[in-house]
Length: 474
Image (cartoon, rainbow, N blue to C red; front, side, top):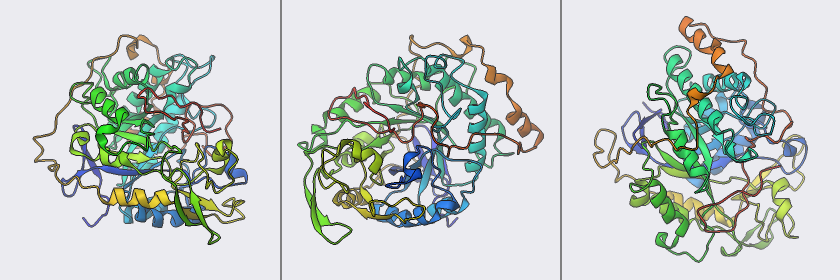
């Protein structure tokens, strides 16, 4: 009863506090604290959320409090490791967690190459078992908000469409596992959804496909929530929500006159960078006052939490907590770390120092950029108390299950080898825990250009609603 993060109830398009029934909107932050140097800086799939990295996340949770966030998105977890202390510390801070099921390691993602991107080959039993293992591990934490069954997985297929049925099938199987095992191996039902990329012509029909039923008697093949990685608002000239052309397009695409889906929708990444944003001064880690260019002002927060947008979105997740030096250096434009000059690939609201910190032998410290406080102030001003509680919400538009787009096939058109791998669900029925589950630890160095690279690093400089990230974190 005194928990700062009671488990959430998903009803219609919204999440609610299970203790009070109050509506919960999400003020989020993407969290992957890659150090500046060393072996860890070169890996896409380090699980920083374990006891091994306690010094890292204990440092950062204090800054999470200052940011006024109530949700973080984490990538590339290793379910064989111990996460209790991390999750409990977040619970004490009032922070929920969106957990990714995929990672950038061998057999940890959906197929995307010419050899394995077509169904049913793009979805393997190894991935299915990995998903089950993560769900078993994290369902016991009441501050687990949901599981993301994909992070822009389709964008990395050669034609950006081939593995779409595999993404839908993975969602479906994870939902069936949750429904079958809750109350037995799983203490509760945690929603399973998907994170998609932002594109009107390709990704929006895919979102429609993920939310539709290709087989009417299968209740599990619809995603329970949709996250969209979007970098539409890049204009510092906009002063009002009405001037945010890309966001206004969102209302048309996803609102009552658009798809109007019957599930929660949020921005799983947002925060486009631009040199047009203001230059602001602060003291750096040496005590020297420097001017940092292009400090984002977060008009997106005003939009997402306004009454009009709250009819469509339940909030959003800023990308990202800390500057990733290995990535930002690719676009530094000659400006050295800590990037006082604008760097297109520096999405951090703060940076790590010293320059050679590796989180192993040399401790990384964190220092916020000026944009950090601008975001903290915006999040602190969020007030969605005008939205009624779970039993008093007649204003909620229930939305609809969308029709399936013609360009994507029914799941029943394929013979899925993974359907013969039902050991996990059988274990639920017999109350035996499958403790021998094998999974590839997501802490290996990447062995392939996986479609689940964590996190996604976009390169955009437009207000267009048809954004394509031009690169992915190497």
